[in-house]
Length: 212
Image (cartoon, rainbow, N blue to C red; front, side, top):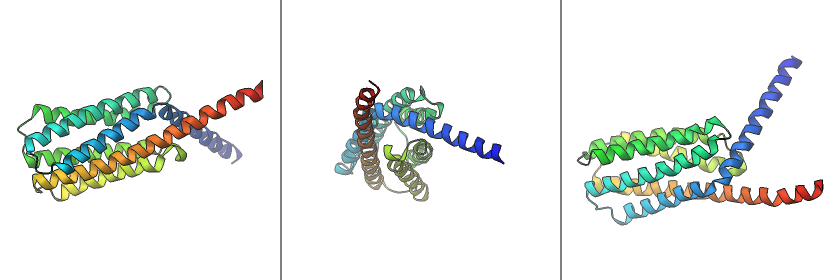
């Protein structure tokens, strides 16, 4: 019984240490998260301000957003993965983004229904990956904001599956609203990560002074 308790404590301590390390790594790369948030907000505003855009133009916009967002996700994931392989989830999210963008680029004559299914699948998969990644973050590093982003993505994907025959204008507005909310949530996470990084850097000199 005692051995089991000790083993449980050791496992809990190891998990906490890993979460701390991963949170610090992501905090050091807060700018990548912030850029993804700003990109989402920009894409969302474009969609909301130009809801009557043609499907072909929208496909180009969506592909560009996916490709750039995927690159930033992979950059953040590679840097974070150096201290923990579970951040492979972030890299996988970036790969899914790139795949969705490439499909849109290579299939420019994609039909509206096919585009809706593509976006729905992308939203559910990336939302699930983001939700999983959120729970490797410490709470004060923006865990729940990142989780909310994942939940929002999953809900958005489910809505598209339920209503696959919505018009191009409605789709553009839905995408715009989703991207705006998603971008704001990521920006909040980035600010929290930046705040934790500054707090850690302030404590570091103080700790060094005490040892001296």
